[in-house]
Image 1 (cartoon, rainbow, N blue to C red):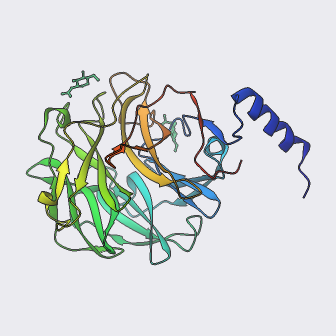
Image 2: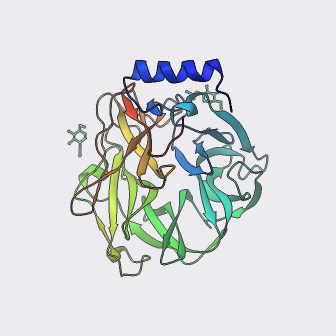
Image 3: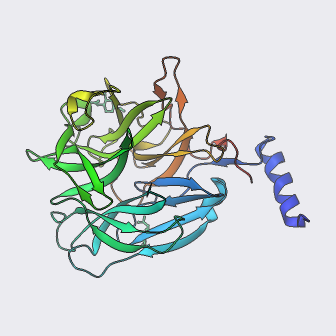
Length: 328
Ligand SMILES: *[C@@H]1O[C@H](CO)[C@@H](O)[C@H](O)[C@H]1NC(C)=O
Ligand SMILES: *[C@@H]1O[C@H](CO)[C@@H](O)[C@H](O)[C@H]1NC(C)=O
């Protein structure tokens, strides 16, 4: 196998200019603009990134984080059914029994009151063709994600309970049907109620047999939109809020010119040894809920007691080592 002149030159430039022996360095943002509500998986040689576009579901793929900036883009879904055509938000890939499913939020053109979680069925690769499978939440719901505890699948989503935007949980009985709805967490602390009381954007996190759910707290049009954690007690019924302990405050907040750091996903490095946080933020100091948000990535570190350390969002353009096992 021969390396092209361009490949060698790119390697040398990357190595010399980035001052690192790791050719797989990267800097954020990875998608800018239109990086809202990012979710990413690594599967069989590629990162697959999807974000909110409002009109359809798009996937960007590349073999490195840096490569996502100029990655291949495929639109895998758009829908003319008036009840789910519009306000397409927060797509996420989840693999169930070897098949990739895309959970997303959508509603009608006239109001946000019809937002529901829906699911598409794909194939053996996240890059395969998707077809519509069904509506998952019976009533208002956004930001669906899949949690797995002891081989049981659960859907967590942001629901309306007592007129407040909470996180809800139910068993995911099939990829498109759920059991009884339970409230998982409610926005009650001062740091969860800036602008409006909001809990949304849940993202399961697994490490050494322990389970957390990260979620976004406060209103996205404020700089206090941030990530907090629910820690699972390891033995209780995941459907009961009492089995989860909320962090004392937010664990990932506005920093270094990144405002409203939130609505994240977690992905695993190519060699499976590291967990990474992919999140969105905005340059606008008052926060933003629109397409001006960019997607950025940062490795999750672990404290001595085994709890996650999400760190501090670095300034845009900061050069970081890419995920472990990445081949440039
Ligand atoms: C909102 O964010 C500001 C600055 O980031 C912080 O000083 C303030 O304490 C936060 N407000 C709440 C209620 O947490
Ligand atoms: C986001 O993408 C849409 C098309 O999907 C485009 O019209 C828009 O200008 C983009 N940028 C922002 C900031 O929303």
